[in-house]
Length: 172
Image (cartoon, rainbow, N blue to C red; front, side, top):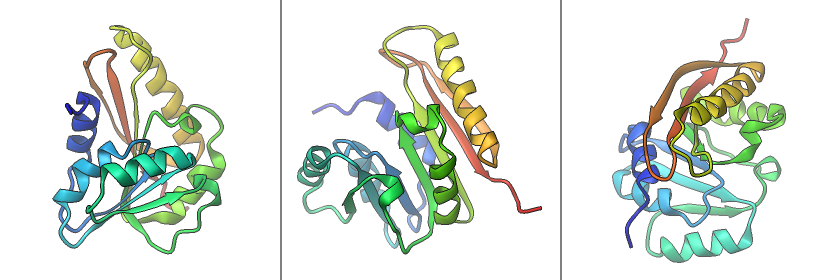
């Protein structure tokens, strides 16, 4: 089965190191996990999704792959690990009031860790639509106490994608 280009691009943007500890929020079918896990040697990948059906599909897709899958809402999950990279793709919490989630992410990020928020709008070839989503997500991140490191765009089918890379603001 061909992997959608958006997942390939997202994994490229994460610049995976073999010792990275990575958290995916909203893993869906586990496609990103299947691309990330083989790149890890001493690192780890943890994937969370609130849908039991999606976690079941992700586990089946990644049978034999070293990954932790958690069926739970992100806000209800208690993790005892810090992550170098936390990412989400098309997770709507980053388009609305994500204050609670951003506080949790801050607690789960390792020092110098980064949050990567990816979004691909509904089918359209409009880069302006992607930029609108980028602006909304950037506003949420900044109001949640994050500094934007980069905003990247990629023309893909059926719509352009955006990646917003951020880190928690340093404590005053």
